[in-house]
Structures are given as structure tokens and as C-alpha cells.
Image (cartoon, rainbow over all chains, first blue to last red):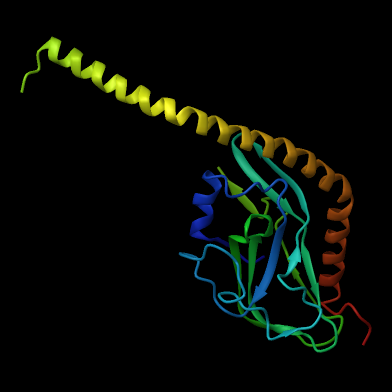
Length: 142
Length: 79
């Protein structure tokens, strides 16, 4: 499982009403351009261009299904379903980074995953799955 | 500087008057803002509940799709 890196702006937004994660539409987008975690505030195609080949890739990425958004003894956890990108003919890629962002809140960024090297889905039916940890959650905060 | 109790009380009264003047201007606009937030929260809660109802079962389906995609090494179509 690839490590989650939060965007710095996310922490401020949390305390200033910038997110309502229990109900907002959360998306994952693919890009081959390294995000700037220290300063990026919102996902956009200028800073985070879609893969050059985007066959079967929905503009803006996939919406993610939330399972739970809750705290236990003061530790908050957001549990998300794994998200699968499936290429059609022509493929998807290259991409190296997955960006988690809040579509409902002007695309404010949450966090990102660096897969270490570029990935390309070459053939129709090739799939890439963003694997969120169901136990610790995609996001945990205390 | 004169820090006698009388002078301090006078200054305190003067500051209180200024604070109350600002509060009088602030209170209606803050109340308006709080009403907006309360209305938004009520509407969002109802919308969130509708979304959750519509999405019932989706999490399990997503998880199973991801599991199968991984099991197939990402090759979800026969070659």
C-alpha cells in the first residue's frame, strides 16, 4: 500500500470549514506531474494534468465511495472504497501520482500518493486500483 | 500618566462604550451569517442522507471489483 501524503493546506481547511467529508464528493485523479504538497490548494488540470492517454479515464478522475466518516475515542477515520480505473482501447497513462481531492468544495486537495514510477495501462480492460486501507482509513487524525 | 482609580474607571467606561458600539453593528450581521450556516447545515444533512441511501451497497461492490482487478493483475478483459 502506497503511503498517504497530505497537502499542507488541507490541515487548515479542516479547521476552517473547508471540508465536510461525511457528505462531500471525494475524487481521485491521476497525473504524471508531481504535486506541490506544500502549496497546492486545489486540484486543477494546469497543476495536475490528466494522463496524456486518457481512454476510459473520466475527466477529473473517479468519485470515491465513502464507507464511514467517524471518530472513536478522539481519533477520526475516513474509510473509502478502493477505486478502480479501467482503460478502454488506447489505454491510460502515463501517471505516477494519485491525488485525493474534494470535488464538492471547489476541488480542495486532501492528499496524494506517489507510486514511485510512471504507470501506463496499455490495453482495453487494463485496470489500476487505488487501494485505501480499510482498517486505518484513507485519512486518520487525532 | 494618571493611573488613579477614577481615571481608570473613566477609561474603562469609555472602552465599554466603544465595545458596545461595535457589538451593536456586529450582532445583526453575525446573526445573519449564523442563520445562513444553520440553514445550510439543515439542507446538507437532508441531502447527505439521500446520497447515503442512494449509495447503499456501492462500497461493497467497489471493494469486490478492486479485489478482482488485483487478483487478475489488472487484466480485467480476456486477451
